[in-house]
Image: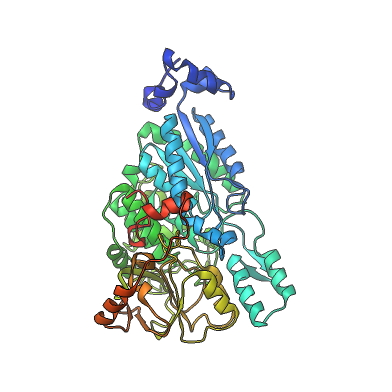
Length: 560
């Protein structure tokens, strides 16, 4: 067998030499030839699934990726891993599996790649946890690799109004309040998700896809092409060709995932009003890469970065609108010009970020990306709070028109279902502080994201008037304060576990504080009485995760 040690050095361990004849025989059983095995072996790590629209189309993209790999002289070998749909499992016990799946995705890609000595990896992701899960695996493996995102769903439409999945959750709240009929709710349900692709707003999937481009682990301009756009096939083909050049140039994740690129990740999330999950996942990237990075660093970056993208759920536009306006390339170019992104970081193309965005074109009269001299808000959308209720930190996302100060009585719920039932029964009133606890990394386990609760409050007209606090995660478009990622969480004895019905909670986002109006003596007395709850799971993957997982301020990683 001929070899090219510049490109296929890793895979030779698996397929070269007399003693590897049995391995070659098994690979020939799936149709590979001696010529195929002499080429670099490239893993195509797919997250395809029929469960939900986000990843439904990824087989189509993987076929194009494999075509590109073959064109460039490599041999692609595809395998699959898991994916959990947040939108489908939201509001059920199944949602606890979502964050757990991030670790399973990372572990499984790492395992298959290490076992089979691939020379490079292309990971295909789409739903919320598949993006960080694939990137975490690439960081661990540190061989030439890239991640490509399956793309955003097209917006739905009903009565000439754009829809997305949050529209359905909000419609549920309106129906429960009697503001719309069941027929209208059903019509919104039927029209909200018109085809394949990830949720359309700047929710977790699109936020993390943007982050992947600005960090450099995804090629600039590829992730933001919508899922069903014909150009998605073209960029998938190009990604397959690109991995071969990366191997030739020995471009690895360790060259790309640096302190500067992590700063770019948070700056892009802050400037786009992105999901607070960006904090959790960027901290996980830092832990995987061994780079010191903390909530205090994230606060400093968000404080100095303007909000310049008017994106749902806090704004008006969806990811497809951003793409049509000029895309992530225009957004990043603008931030580089203002000094808010590091333009000198390396990307998978071999270009710097500044070089990769230099030719970005702005669509005339676009309204999605604001100029730097007229931002939506002078500081970023991610705010870190600390105080006696969250000594190690909590996260809130702000657009700028929320009330920066809230003081109100705690309404205590020890699981999401109880809180949602109270909302359904219209037991939550203006001024209340809804506390949903024992939903953290350990307590859930898995930090459920509670869009159902927040959207129902919006549907009932309470979106501006109720504050929500959890050691899990919140999502949705309320204009009140939604505070999540409380660390330490209730299940490990954090202050949130000590709260009682009616305790006065005070949050000041200007000062960055979150406190309960209790003295240290009162807290100590309650802490002495507190007993940890029995775990929800005593065996299997959920129990294993609860035993291994770190707190939210450490990225909720199991690789610590």
